[in-house]
Length: 268
Image (cartoon, rainbow, N blue to C red; front, side, top):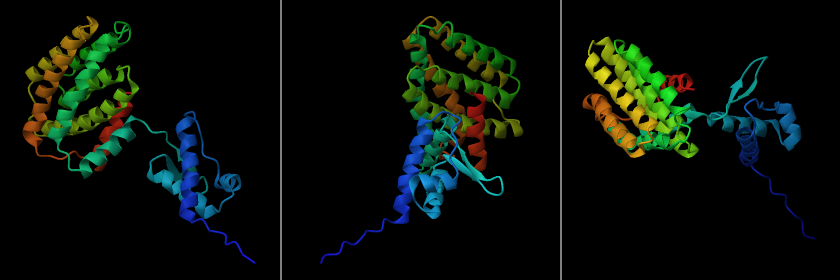
């Protein structure tokens, strides 16, 4: 008589299967999706509590949930957003020792495309141009406040990405812009403290260039908008690269992560 041995599935494989299903639910659900209780999940999947806890830990390491301990504990769901994408990309670049100069070059290759795509939008005069012009006016009012001016000027670049029709480009280039903005805003704070922030004239020159890009977008001059945006990026980046050319992209520090998150919150 032949006996059939039951193969015991390792707990970690069960947890990965449960995590995969919960991950799919989180990513495909509405923003108000909440994770069921552990009791509910144990009954639904027919697995043990340790397997459910391990599945939730997997999701926690991915940034998809935050586990609250205590009497009012539970798992809070976080759908991925631009700041989490930028943060994890930043960690990959930092781990690979990618320099700020390399990040800057990547931006010069990709961000100007967003300016040209904005100029190709049929609704640019109603949607894109008013937002960009409002930002130019805000920047003009802030030319004497180094840190605030830098934050507002960086928002101009983020708006170009935000109004790009292609969603894939928005996410990829938006992550790069967020990483660069975090570096540039930290640079602005450091130089302001030392009284070395670039002159008012430089700030006004940047505003004039932004205004020219807006004019090209409004007129539908896609090629010119891309060309001016590329030249402007190169000039603006040189201010940071002259001091930190050998620096590596930094996303792991608490200050860098906070800068990435605050940058994305303020820009919607």
